[in-house]
Image 1: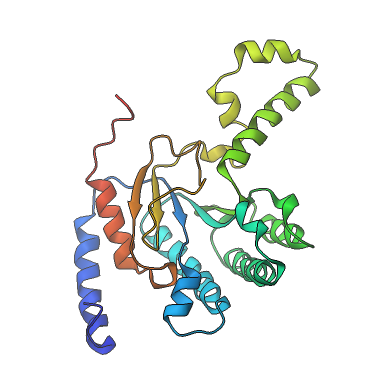
Image 2: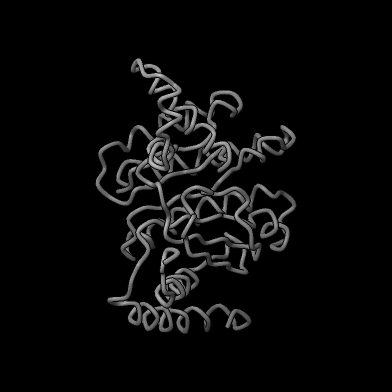
Length: 260
């Protein structure tokens, strides 16, 4: 269908999209979706852009569109993987423009009139300049909104999150006058879950990755213990509502046994 002229493809896709949405009525939906927004630079090169930042800009616009879909399709919680802690090692001339576009995107998600409650998660202290403050202020403006909960993962690494959760659990225990040895004796799964960057998202139901790559790259390692995975071949800026509906159809067709 993608080979058809645009003026033919759009009405055909619209009909297919409505039919696909209708087949999902009453079927199980994931409550928490994690999505890896991959392929922005490759999309820009494929589209003929000399500046790969055009891919990030297109990806930022797609993010807001995606959250609209999630709201319409009954999703309660989304985690957007925008920048890993490993990505922070990129050269300054690459990292700086990327973080600027992430700031623009987060401000757009958090703008007045948007229904979403935003939290930025990750090692924000590792971000350059005032970026952490910009992101925190944008997210703080959304406190108390009752719509879709959106976690934006920036400078995020799943292994680092688990280490930080363990440290935080011990710091809390010691600050309350507790004996570290006593916490070691009774330390449990919940002690980590309660101290994750987003403790209300201690598990995720469904992880989607665009661009055709089939690996987690450190994304939500603790939360994804029993998550269903879905790999999409298209690059993130080219991701369509039809692709998302197909992903939801795939999720609904699976038997989730949680190891039982």
